Length: 92
Image (cartoon, rainbow, N blue to C red; front, top):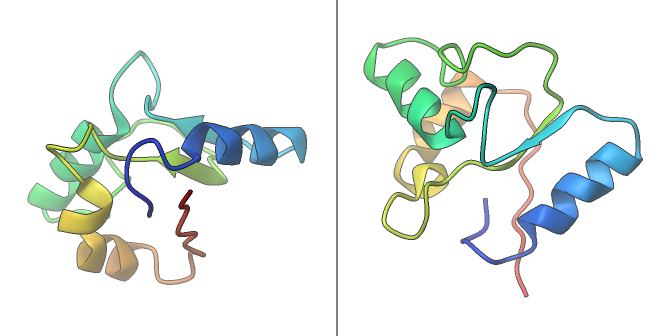
């Protein structure tokens, strides 16, 4: 849930080192996670339904830079769409 440049690459590496399937920025095929998350929400579907990837344990970064903070702008929708998720606020 942190802002850009707040350790998401390290968080992604941490999850991968632990054997988890983690994505960072892109969600398959070079698509930005932010784009598919917003697309799902705007379609009235669960936030990650349009990302077209399965078995993801961690989304280490889901914004599209400081101008599109999906994790902030759509936090309520993400929490409602994934009620059992654990959210990590990274900071430096």
